[in-house]
Length: 310
Image (cartoon, rainbow, N blue to C red; front, side, top):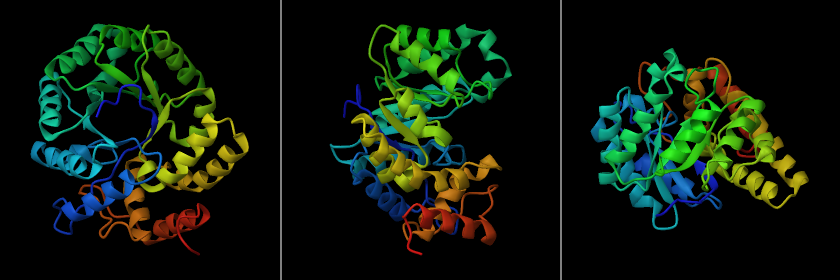
């Protein structure tokens, strides 16, 4: 599926594990099918942070992509995360994604970029260009927060979009409104259409007002229908309806996106388990299962969002 110019909702899916720690293939397919069948979902994103990609080996990552390809059909795209700490590894994962049937890759910056890569823009350009050359798959570029040290400066972001034609979209997570606006300006001014997918999870509604073509977020693994309602209302200018959807979303974002941040997707697994959509909520070690008190808070958030009966 050609995802060029495609916005809408792109949920970042979770990876269910069996009690022995192996991937639960049946639960994975059921989870992906549930997302793919949600109105407004245009692409499934696998092997990202939400999918605990760094705990998966190369064969497991390919297996997840194949499962997504199997259930997505022709109506929904498949985007595979490429999370690697070196260029060679990223290129290998990009080729694996193509072989497994992905339609595009979501390219994460290596963590070492946080050590000052902003002072070496050629490093980012060479990294992204090398991955683009390794496969014919188009690229969704992950723009993280500037505070993390992993975000691209607006000038570099614009340059990447201009000089790497394989980039068809940007997952925009600058976190700060002013930085988000600067990214939007750089992307819109790159000289060709590049889809902007907001992932500013604690202010998605506001980021849509600034301008976005869609939402790519881990919260979509739990609340893709709410995201779709909010996005559709925003697109048609129905602010009241968008606010209502946002009011449903807020209890979830408040309970998911809090300290410690390493548990955010672990909490989403617990939410799906409470909803009866995931048989086993536990993550892979060293992550720990959610404690009973926090499970109660997640349950309350699901009830407040209208996703679970009181």
